[in-house]
Image (cartoon, rainbow, N blue to C red; front, side):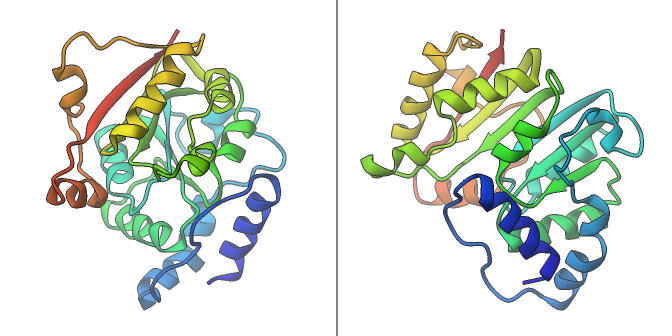
Amino acid sequence: MSADFEKRNLQSAAAVRLYGRRKGKRLRPHQAKLLETLLPRLALDLSPPIADAAALFARRPAAIFLEIGFGGGEHLAAEAEANPDCGLIGCEYFENGVAKALALIEAKKLDNVRLYCGDAGGMIDALPATALARVFLLYPDPWPKRRQRKRRFLSDSMLAALARVMRAGGELRFATDIDDNAGWTLGRILRAPDFVWKAETAADWREPWPGWTATRYEAKALAAGRKPVYLTFVRR
């Protein structure tokens, strides 16, 4: 693991307890090189807190999107490519996922992506109010055991934190293939004062969003016979 990547993870873990692995299989030589060369140009430093989110990007974007836990970066890179006038912030703690995302950013020559290699809670706390137009949380760890549910990301307190940094009318897009996680999350959204679920028909949650780019995790879920849901929550 690179020294810089380890330092960023330790800074994040000092504020928020993270669960799961930091690193998986040994990186390929080019992936390791990208961590040393490309990542420093894209990585965000949260000290001090961010006063102007648009200033994080070379060209001031029309809107800023945040992806929480971008995995291998397939969706993050696709959104950045499809929305060149928008800025994408991706948060990921897992080094191998960051390395894969960097390879996609390099291959697609994307200049509207910034990365935070740590817990998304720290990123959200550092952003100014109403900075985000859209937030993605796609197939997060469902923490299926009852004693683990407190680890799920969209807690009441996190929804309040997200409400602070999202503009009115902004979308929080959530996908999962675990029924219990979907129901648990909906329960918190329905009691949250700052978000509304506007679904009217089954198609509103059974069908993915326009331009959707499937992730590797989704492919595994479908292969296992699990049916994903795609929930859109709107900031009031």
